[in-house]
Length: 555
Image 1 (cartoon, one colour):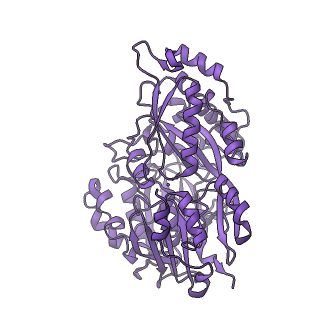
Image 2 (image 1 turned 90 degrees about the vertical axis):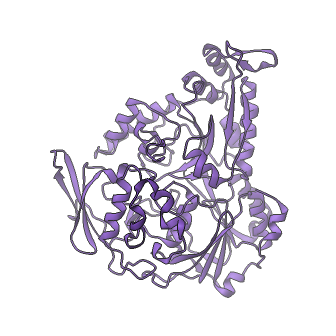
């Protein structure tokens, strides 16, 4: 998952260095514009697309999902399967169905300080991940690993307590360098603030990708230079700068002035802005639009007694004209979402409950819930308290801020008052959302992989609390026994037809209970210089930077 999102104006344009388009061709440098700065550089703490994007330059996962939506090896030699013998069915110590999966790390793979990547790093990552106090985004995947057998320095076998349909997918196990970070884990409860990833983020030993980070200024930029210990294909650029410009209007202006060479599709302009840009400047750039598994929605704080009433949540949906938002703001290119499952995903259920814009149904539900219209048309309860909510998102994102204003107007017609309060992305995701500090509504996007079981966002055991050091991504606080049961059973079902039936039930519960308000599915807009080739959008949560060594300069 990833959460996606974005401040100031003309002065920022002139504060940035200006390069002419084509300067990168002359000195083998590239300047990328993005809208977010990571809240942490630790690969397994917090889930933020900005971090995944820059880690694509500096790190490599054991496995990932490629642009063809297939699981492939990156750090491993061969993807283990039941067919090739790399995975074997077994019984767990308590007699349940488990599985043993064996991986071999590529022999040449090493950290940026020259230390080989070994099974020690795998074991340390597992120890951190499964500890309830470590603060990782989700400990569930780590807890499922019962033990790790060390075959040799590069080969290991995971003994997992269940057989899942994606048993060989290790994309979310972000390796940690045991030789650097283990001393910081002596007190797991403080590890989150002691990790070398944040206390010494330019340490080359943290990286094993084509680049290492050599400079970072919070909220401003990050600089990446070639990793002298990189063991893979030689990348084209000697230096890549990722410049953070949270205001999308200013981001566009910097591209035109030459302050940046390209705008990231993962963290750049929304479709409406990119379409307008294409009309004005399309001949000067290559512009790619990639539909994908990016779910724009509003998380609802279910600790709020008013939002605990399902009638209120459903009324909010009926009072939202999402079709008008899609057509008027996005030219119909960002379709209405009914749950977090995209129609591009094979598990999508077309019969899922849908909420067409209907103010009469919204009125009936709110009246039934005890919220009556008073003078001026706004609603109050029997105590005279107004039906009022606060909505939050990332500051500087012109499209999101416009959507907020549209929602504010639409919901006013239903007698609901809305206050808007936005924050910079690193604050919004680093504190407000992660620690469940938003009082009512938080608007952002999840980006996922195909058939990605949303356990971490919907299971009741994944609700972040101070007691679990804010682990988990169930920021709404949603707790539903039927949903919990489905989340646990879906991944264990190997029969695709039976699994699809379960997915239909999951989508039905989601659309009925509405822990979040579905808005639309986003497309990514890549704005690239004519001389840059090799960028292939994936349409899912794994960013294009994971293949940065394939980017090339066309002279």
